[in-house]
Image (cartoon, rainbow, N blue to C red):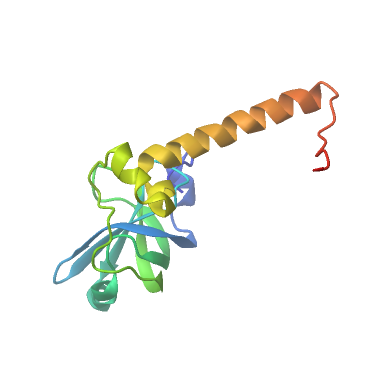
Length: 154
């Protein structure tokens, strides 16, 4: 949704998004949850109103979530669209001492938590770049008449 060439084209669509909670802000009448799945640098902001704000109580940074809602034009200036959330499911929770926060982390620190590295912007961007380059190389050789062969392991 974030990477759509024309974000206005998806406004009004009912969608289900899944990813990790980056930030959670709950107020009395409104709640905000930024969800990122690693497919782009930016996350999608989900807005909770009324009784939906109570659902954010058990969500912390790093929780795996699934949010169903309607894509609407954003009232803020940082993004073109946001998700007006209808329901929230916490797929996987995290401990209170979850090491990744929204701030920037050193690569040395990330080496100590190898299982969480793909959730960071730096390594997710490297993975997207690697995927794009691999696709381009495969496409080039395919269009040039080469065969892709997995040789047997001896």
